[in-house]
Length: 568
Image (cartoon, rainbow, N blue to C red; front, side):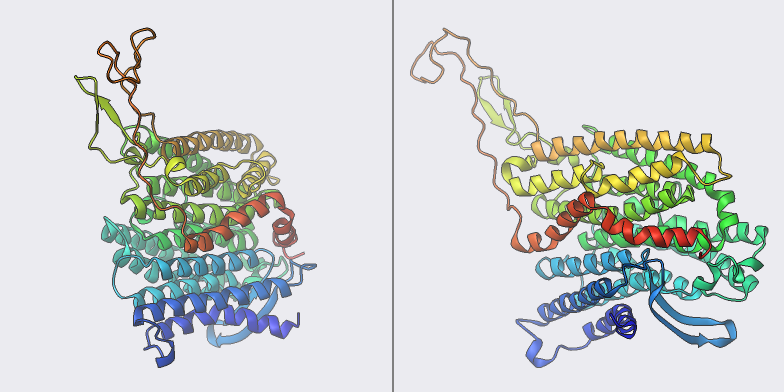
């Protein structure tokens, strides 16, 4: 495609959501009002995010796939000459998949909200915040100036805060404040690191700083170590890295469904993308110093996330399924950080692949858990996994229904819903043939043989811990499938022994106690048409990425090789 056309496409992808957010707050034109103003603004959100997705797909089609390491669709305009801050946009094989993923997930969230708007204030504000959130996320992956990166990185905080605080569930105010305080404090420290790089090198241009013979040569070892420490804290909060993760479970549990999908699907990727785009190429010496510590914390996060999920799924623990998936993200993002810490092409490619896989799979899981809560009014695992129908034998030998909440037992009540939930769980545990497998495997391969100068025995230890984490992940996700999809076994009255009379004949006075026949499970709605539309793309892409990983790795590998090679 013509370079100028690509340039306009990328500019449109970044700018259209902001313009759409302004349009969402304006009155709808008379011919577009539909049945009511709420429907009009929700339709506006679907239309705008659909146009952005179409532009992102056109950008991906027109991208020169033969040269994915080259920055393409670039715009470079002077903004603040005194500080050499420029409006510099561009995408390569690293950022393009994240741009498309963001556009896809935002469109699916807008489509889902059109049919199932979360309870809260005016849809006008909801759609406007959703579009501002999309604009900030897309800009984060497209800008090539450190100051613009920081502004885009911060731009997503306010809309996500309000999405949680105004449209969230129980505990939404505390969760929203915890989210914004953690991320803001981390961002303040990150800004100091970015300013240190810009002032010491004389430029904030990320492309120029990534080359060995460019301004990066002016950064001493001490400056690089201080910059990585400061920038790394801000990125680690958003990643989320243990022990800076504690805001995440509360935010996910309280957020509305679409908020959880976007938080897990794209916002967490902003932190790990920053490590790959800024820390690795611009401050390699500082990154080399901190790589073992980053890997150690990543391995701890993998084990911690899995153990937390096992504690939540335990019978009687009153665990919340949405909170469990949030803790699983801590473990999955630990694999991403481990791959980055290896500082090898294999590990970094694995991290980038795991980023996309996590966005697809965990986005699907949060959609499903949100729909499960809509159907049952709860995501409490003990409630969802009770036998349904549940009977307790009485002293007279009859069975009386328990007044407890009827369990989900999705395979019997909503088989397609249960099957899709099981698919998401199996994909999340990293089974071969689905997207979750390749990223985690490549991240562990990177740890098996880390970059020169890094302690191989230490990284082998981290790899073993990550491998143990995969086993723990399989354990808790299979338990989730067993408890929620299968339900429990009904308690039945004892069956009469043979020869004690015909238990089927109630007229026989000598008949023994009859086996209690469970009542049919109450029906719940299976997958609706709009849910099919919102969830099917994620399931299909999860399968395609698992069966054809070269489609993604072919984009990222040349770009990663050049990034780690100092622009060569």
